[in-house]
Image (spheres, rainbow, N blue to C red):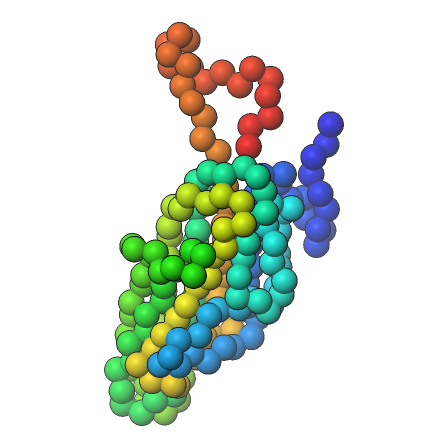
Length: 177
């Protein structure tokens, strides 16, 4: 039985997975702006996401651990200013402890200085939970570099150990998710 689906000339896995990226630039402000992605590279049926939205929702009934990986590069057009950039991961509208990344970038009127941020986070999710990424800056002149904002969310399959088999993993012919 084949469980793979074709999308964008790629074979995508049956386990919940989503990979989004943004080809354009997005400006961030002192009041905070949620990241949006315009390109869906991989999205299995376990997730709901519409291009240019800020929420990624888990649809599957399988709850469990997911690894979230966010990457983005920024620049500023502010003159001789150290710009502080805060990026936070949110689950169901609540900021996650340990899901924050802080960086600084100095501007000189031209976008020559850039900074990058990476967030790697393991999170427990269940059906209808949603994730968002919010970036807040100390000026209104911070811009996301094109083709650098990426979000990857993968289900982490966890196998239990059968102590009667000396610690060996036993699948018993079942589909692991």
